[in-house]
Image (spheres, rainbow, N blue to C red):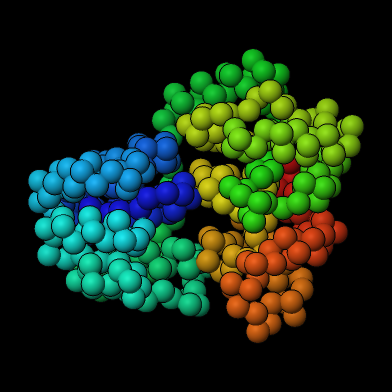
Length: 352
């Protein structure tokens, strides 16, 4: 059993372990413990035999939590890989009955596991630390596992076709470029400032002839999304299909699969685009190191930008905690004029 709760991008990225384990141990039964809202990014994965759904409310109900743990014990796992590595999942791992229990090394959770791994600080491949740190768990099984693997979403052909039809009915012309824009991150600390984002959207609309733009954001961010729309130029607003918004994750995945490119904040939406092999231009939060989530960036069809690329002195001798506390101030320095040349080059290379 592999445990990965919470964020959509994390659940998608951790799914790389299943293919690697299946190829090495084809007779093994592989289960994935996740939260229900993340299921669409992994539900068609052919290497996952069973999903164990964990509702967040279990943490607040000791009786139901123990009943859940009892169901875990009944599975008779031999190995547990806890990538989430919190106290609640540490307890699940310990009480699962598995002899081999693997996780990251943390002082407050290490006693729950039979073996822990230190986070790798510097990536040795273009995969990025989010990939390499997960793949190192497999060294506990065998030393000849690869160091990296690419996350994939196994979207059914019918799902993509239905989405294409829905988009066409909403006014989308599939012969013209269709661009998915992740205009907001999962929080303010992961969202490029609205006034700056609107400038980048204007750049896209001006450079890509007949471009058609879709917005992606969470349902609770609708007012912020409207605000960004209103900040865009009249030309850009005429290219935005605001009503073709996917409220459900599964619908976003299907829509994104029909897009020519993704542009926006680094996060789960960008990771989904990469897993669908959609060319991606993503903007990193200043408080998150680019070498962690800059998965397989190649400066061609997977491009990411970070303020440190342009203003490295701002980050010298600065601890992550201090950067995070001043994240919004860092964002203000990350002006669109810094990003636009690389964005324009990205769009030109794709020849849309």
